[in-house]
Length: 462
Image (cartoon, helix red, strand yellow):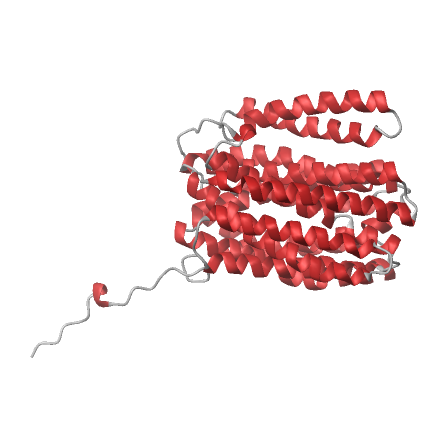
C-alpha cells in the first residue's frame, strides 16, 4: 500500500489570530502605542485641578481639554486624507512626534496661555496618530478580525487606567504635576523606534481611487473651518458671563464656520441624521459628549466638593476604564444588530451620568462615582467599538480614511463642545465648593439628555 503525504487541503483550517505570525507585528505595534498614549490620557485628567490652581487658570479648566480636542479634529482630517492617498505610516509617526513635543511644552509651561498652546500641539499629534491607527486596522486585518482588533485596542487601556491615576498622583505629590508630562516622554520615544520596522513593512504606500471627500485643499479648508469655528464658539460661550454681547457674537460666528466645516467633512446627510453611515458616524459624537462631558469634571468635583485627594479622585476614572474594557470585550463576542447595541450603550452612559451626579450631593458619599462610572464605561466599551466596526463595514475602501477621520471629528467635537460648555457653566455658576457642586449637577443633567437623544436616534443607523 502506497502512503502519500497529506495534502494542504487535508489540514484543519486555522483562523487568523491577532497574535499569529501574519498579524503579530501590527498588533504589537498598535497596542504598544495605545498603551502609552493611554497613560497620558488618564494621568492628565487626574492632575488638571493642580495645573489649574498652579497656573491660576481655573477659568480655563474646560478650555484646556477643548484645546487638545479641537486641534485633534483638524489633524484627524489631514491625516485621514494622507492615509487614503499614501498609506498610514507617515501620519502615524508624525503624530507621535508632535505628541511628544506637546508633552515637553506642557511640562515647561509657566503661563496658562503656554499650557493651552502645548495642549493644542498634543492634540495635533494624538489626532493624526489615532486616525492613522484606525486606517491601519482597516487595511491590515480582514473584516471578521476587526471586532477583535478594536476589543484589543480597548483592552490596552486597562493597565494604564488601573495604575495611571495612582502613578500620576504620586508623581505630582512628590515632584509636581510637570513631571507627569515629562515622565511620559521617555516611554513614547522607544515605542516609536520599535514601531518603525513594522510600519515600513505593513504601511507601504497604496494607490486607491480618489473618494468623494479626498480633495486635499477643500477638505483641509473644511477642517480648518470646523476646528477654528469650534474654538471661536467655545471661547464665545466661555465669555458669555463676562461680556454677553461679544460672547454671543463669537458664538454665532463660530457656529457658522463649524456647520460649514461639518457639512464638508461628514458623510452626506449626516447633519440631518440620514439613515445608515451618516447616523452611524454621529453616534460617536453622542457617546463622547455624554461621557467625557462629565468624565473631565469628576476629579474637580470630588476634590473641590468632597475633599478627595488626587489619588482618590482618580479611582473613579480607573473604574470607568475597566467598564470600558469589559464592554469592548462583550461586543467582540456577540453578534446582533449594531443599532441595538448602540441603544444599549447610550442607555448605560446615560444611567451612569445620572448616578454620578449623586456624588456631590450633601449626605451622599463621593464614592458613588465608582459604580456610576463602571456603568458608563461599560456603555462606552460596547458603543465605541461597535460604531468603529460598523463604520468601516459601511465604507468603501477608498473612503476608509475619510470616514475614520469623520468618526474622530464627531468624537473630538462632541467631547470638546461638551467639556467647553461644562467649563463655561462652572465659570458662570462660580468656583466655591457649593457652586462647583451645582455646576456639576447641571452638567450631568445636560449630558444625560445628550445620551438619551443618542439612544432614540440609534435606530437610524440601519
